Image (cartoon, rainbow, N blue to C red):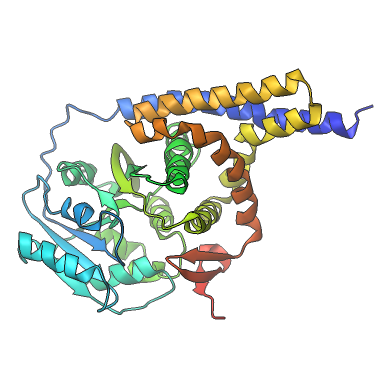
Length: 384
């Protein structure tokens, strides 16, 4: 007869083994994906384009990040910095950059337009009205971009079958322990999973920090206005593009996103928000991640058994996780991630807590505003 203890031990073994196998597979898929980055391709497709940079508040390294889009090795483009509040503390910085590079290159938009609960989409709606070109790049304010970024992201649109392009990203500049935990969530967990899903065809991705799309494609999928109530507007853009029959391209090109969290509470809220995002975008793949969470279940097995075998399985799980994470970080040129790996077992343990909370919490905090999650990935502002 199987006792409850035996059943629990058996159940723990599934994610322990699943997590170990998945960790090894992510090393192989990242290597395969990044190897196809086509270093020899000549990027001679340089149509005029408009970059939309929605800005809200003073973020860490804001001026440095925003300037990187103004120093691109690209012949003809327009930048639109947009804010929603005429009193936004970032506005003087935007005016300084506009003065430095000229109003031919940089436009400033202050728009209080509100089409829905998603603040980023509202901000973009004000900006896109001033766009002079069909090809639009939506680029987050916390991205730090290399001079070849525009040439890289626009290149796949040379193929008329491609409707939308996005890039990989990694988090940088984690100064505090909670920012390092955030960095590990993205760089050692989320992005390897995205690449694994892309290479194996398990699921598609559209990553929000950096998207290229034609205005004609946006119009075809309902326009930005139709996205204003979605929590995960980037995934919804991708979903509509690939269900409309156009191709969605995930580029093997990694941009940097500067992490900016004020305190551990901000980090906690953002982790729950991030998992809610992932759950709403792709419920089944997210639920299935329980099968690859090796460290929490290896700890549980060690506590149940209370012997040397349990201890070895826990140490073994940590070792495999750290070695494979170190290799994937190396492949992504994420030296910061390698230096922060000592925190990864703790992040993985807390990751299970956030996973559970994403099912139980129906509210989400985004930039200090509380929203209630509605059906089909939509959200409404919560009024107290």
